[in-house]
Length: 371
Image 1: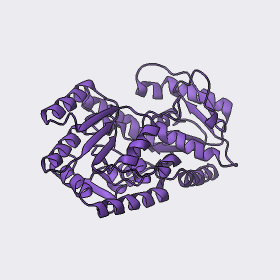
Image 2: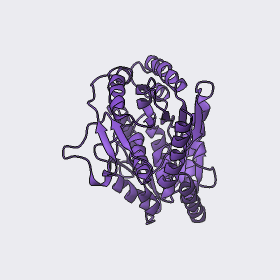
Image 3: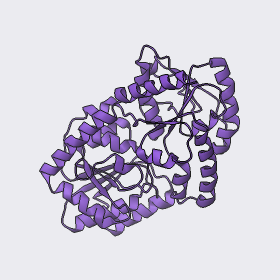
Image 4: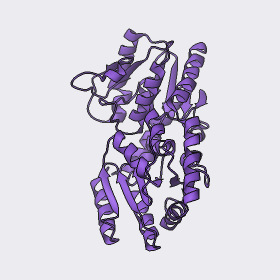
């Protein structure tokens, strides 16, 4: 049970990408029959042929508040559907975990993010009040899960004292295509794939890039991602022009997965200096492609990037620190190549879909045995 995109080759966000990658890998096991249940509307011409081993069930979605739907009409619809399907086990992702808390079937739940924490740094209206409400509902849901998959030690830390079930440590899977990205580096290209938003801290990345340029280091910052909130997007544009970077910072908008791989093939560095993240897919994908990473020294990111080995960790609120680490990688060809190779080796061990699927299947077996 998860957010499953209508167009599997163009997932919107990390949860949809994880869902496609994991379901495809799980469907390859002969001893599993995978049914995908989602409230995301489907394509007009049916499901893609590449998903023919999966059985996709798209339930009618209610409009309105995601939270109210998850604990109300969605939950009732899910319970009715599962009574008919009668599966051996239910694996819920993200907010879908709230729809399954009362289901009397072996359950597994993957925490993809802390909505209350994301809301707090969103800059949106009434963010503090909304964050408190989300925290109350989320933590109550976590406490009722018998088996939880933690995608990062950061998640495990946040679940401490709340979760009563068994916690299993398994990273998110990424598409195998990222492990086959050829390196056609254009030195000086810094790539970032993330929505332009306060949580992703786009402004400070631009500031850091500007300070690197001020030191005489040539480069190009390429930002792939939709503008989450127009006022913030305008602030980013205004700052670019104020710094004279309109020809050095490229706003790519939302791009396809294929284009992301093309961007990674040319990138010297991948940069993401978010204020709140669990385990960003963009970092995993960059590592699989053999690209060094500069990212924040907080939340789940330090558990992904080994400082000085596969990239650098920076203070996301310090543009000088961001500039220094970007310059360090761009200015040292030997270091950059070594970091890229180390990144790829770590990714192959932790993020390959076959490895993640095998570990996930082991959790399914344990959950069914312990019912």
